[in-house]
Length: 178
Image (cartoon, rainbow, N blue to C red; front, side, top):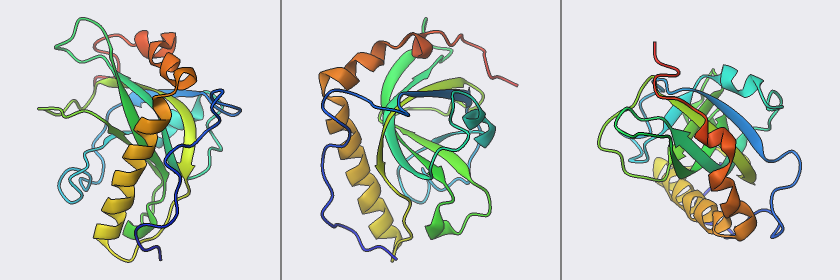
């Protein structure tokens, strides 16, 4: 069980930019998750099917927390919009999940849900492994620190350049809708 805090770095990944296996490019339609991100943790997530990891060399990606960029082809926008993100891939030990999940926290405040919209991800680095927590508050504190780490790590030029990755810009409105 992990307590909050610890001696974690605020920057992750080499200054020169992502190194193998990064960048990883994956995507899929936004689906309903467990309903905990917004309601219970106050940290909304956009989830994609775990099958979304079966492309781009991500099949065996280690469980943990990652950072990078996400794009959405929202019906209200003329072209895909790119946002910074942090994401969890794994079992969420605090909740004792029986199913592995892909949960993306897009660092932006949305006014409405966007289920069914195609989301593209460019994953640029690894923040930390999955942990179990002593409390929900400890989990929330670590997620908030993950967000700071992701944003700080993306400020560097070699990472910021990926905001214009063509993969993020090629998703079309209506892709992924049922």
